[in-house]
Length: 163
Image (cartoon, rainbow, N blue to C red; front, side, top):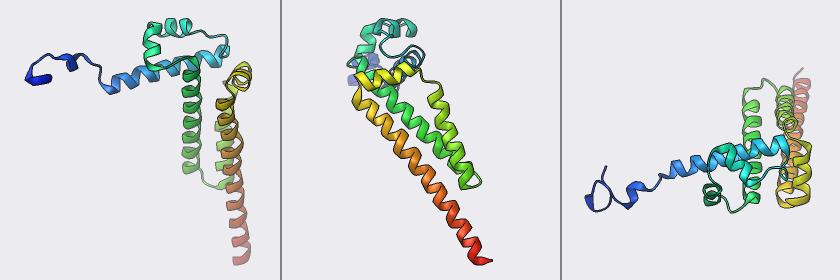
């Protein structure tokens, strides 16, 4: 592969590919998330995140403005992964009741791994992120359970009408 002006080596040849950039960013928020879950957000410093990853703080700051940005990225990804898991459970469930139970169980697994101090830290120091998490917890889960119950009740109603 050639770089600029058909030279085998160029400035762009040394630039990391976007996938490498995203992989590093993903590694950072994932490791930070693990530490936040275990110890709480305020107990984890940028130095500790860097040490756990075996990289410099400078590398972390290239990818994230500050620890708050890492917290926000981590929570957004927790929500996305939880939502994806619940949607998957919905697709493989045999009926609406099983779907609701599996969905609630999947979300419960997420919550059970979180150190309560992390939730407190989010409430106190990251109200915007906490509201996002609370909204997901309250609205998405509620709507899923409600839709499943309505669907199952509708099935029962249709079966009663047919018999």
